[in-house]
Image 1: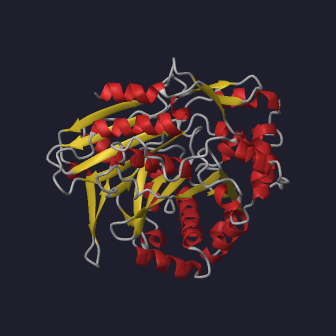
Image 2: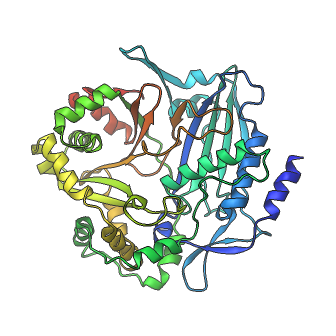
Length: 470
């Protein structure tokens, strides 16, 4: 019965070439993923049914996201495309896994003064002790599936983990949150063949191109910084081959030295008040992280880096007329290149202000310039990639705030998730902020090397506000 239903979904997919935008192809080789943890509070024997999950996935792809079953290629005009061929679909890789331990074995718990007992999923412990040493990542490079789904069940436990990995070239963070919610909505309505999504995605990157055709580019300061930094080594690449060059990029491996800090709402507000009550919590936290990671860097490498970089991605949907339901990549990065000695000598208030001056002045004009950079000066992008890391020469904080994304609303018909977590994600120095609904707080997932984290654990300033989970 299920096979027949899935074939019905697949039969509705039409042959098509879906053009990729400039920012799409710039992310090729990376993926976006997540681990969403649900709790069966009713003892439902069909809780998170794998058949329903698969059926809903095929339906949402066939009806709204055929790009997920396509394959990357270069179109006749030299631009990157995803080719959807009904006779050669890139099928999702879906499996149900069982772990012979309860999920609670992999939880870390903390009791706070207000009586909240907060649970955290320790991914590193899970990979060490569950019998599952790794989870696959979405990739086109080895002709693997573009959609990886694992439903993980545990012995004698009400918890179920849904792991999803998708290629970044198709979705940015906002778009994958929408995809997951739309998948869940289709699953909830499988009994209604006439159901239509409340907020269907806009898939055509023409809406982005048409908008930016009306915008005049203004080069952001960090572009000039990286251009000057690599002046002697930047290689000029003809714009006609940029798409082919980027779509030939190898997969970016996930960074496995992941750590987790927890900030209660009270401690986070205290941090903001201590740094500068006029600033946002995000900027105040970035200031503390920037200085403490620089200090840990100096301790680990026994040298002073020249530059301390802070990177904030921002969703351009909020700053343009492009529809909020656009399903491709429309996230851009603002980078603050700060002299490390200035960071070391400055107050947290001064650091927050410096970050704000670079990272809050974002605009469509800056975004247009970054598109131009990818299309015409790709060497600057490579120079930035080399620089944004923790090394003897550079200190780096890449801070992505996911709190505004509708992740707790991903309900497949059994209620929303209990806990949000990650698989391993890419790039050393990157950090992700998730909201934690258990106590109204935030979790900070940090990609930093273990020996650097050992130095961070000695920071009285950071530990004044944060609780180390793992």
